[in-house]
Image (cartoon, rainbow, N blue to C red; front, top):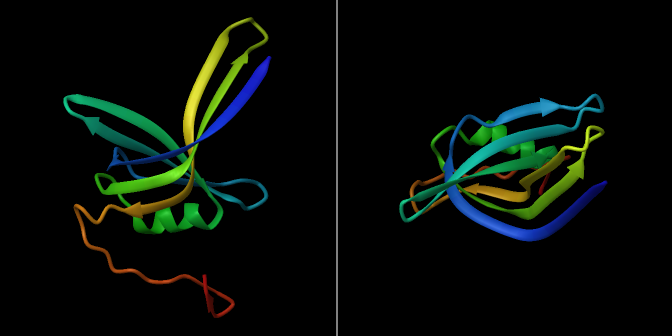
Amino acid sequence: MSDTSTRPASLSGRLQREPEIRYTREGVANTRLVVEVTDGDREYLFDVLATDDLAENIALSLTKNMYVTVIGKLVSNVWTDDDGVYHHTVEILATDVGASLRRATVDVHNVTVRGVPV
């Protein structure tokens, strides 16, 4: 049995570790982030996945301990493996990520594709 559901999500928090970029066999970039969100005296960790150009830009621009804002889809995966063990994972599939300007300043450089800003 397998079930996947998505909902809109946004969060702001601190990067727990360096972004990890990897490439699929087809050459598609994937970057994983762990974002810590503090709510009063409680801390929550969120796994974030970015793909394609966003993944590469994150890996080139962001580092551990930076504060970021993430916009994307909250993806919940539920399945039972062949041994009957129940599994549940939750991650955010990012559609946009940026440095939080509440805690930093940035120097923005537009990316161009074939000479046209995107």
